[in-house]
Length: 271
Image 1 (cartoon, rainbow, N blue to C red):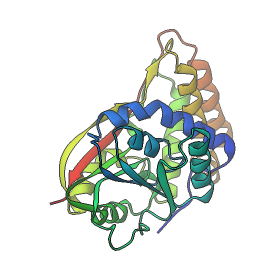
Image 2: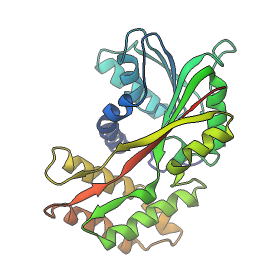
Image 3: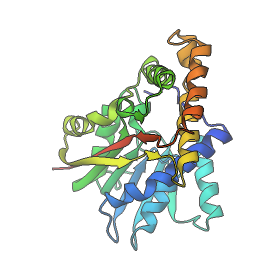
Image 4: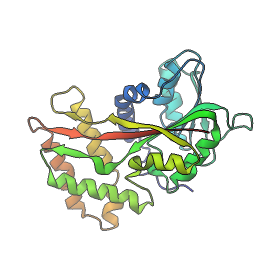
């Protein structure tokens, strides 16, 4: 079962997603416990940046990235070629619910990783079960995703809060869960894995740091992708939605402004 991908795949949006991935990759790698010679599957590999970062992390790590969106997969291969890493990761076309693996590959991976995938699926448990089937006994499934309700800004920006709430509702309209990040250990358990670790990777920041402008652009443009769905379904009017986007840009110039937004992660071990 698949659904509309809320962010779309036009070049501008893909560039935003690429910058977001770059910001998060160091934090992601720090909790993956990668080791030489590991076999890793990256489900919903998107533009492939984290898959390539995993492959570079230690000698001999073999990574397969699976992505259903043709445009994102082509973009991943183009980025890899441009970086001189064309053969570093094998990118395959396929769906996280039906991973394109051979019989010999199923149940053979040391680590299956998925980031920002489950929030876009109407049946995230089915995807986690597929990942559990891909990992070997004693291997790990590592999930990372958003709980959009954990977003906090100081000082407050009520206009933005309304828009952010409407953005979350756009996920629900599509049959997806904007709070999936806080439910990752439960999903691992229900998929037959033993939850072993969980934590947070910071995706926030404060005015004055080098990445602040990129962070503001990312949050505004991410919320903009939910505008059509939210306004067509009457969650918020177009004027109210846009007022929140504009208010966030103005708020970003506030001295001492800060955003507190963690990416949730959890890891399960296959018995």
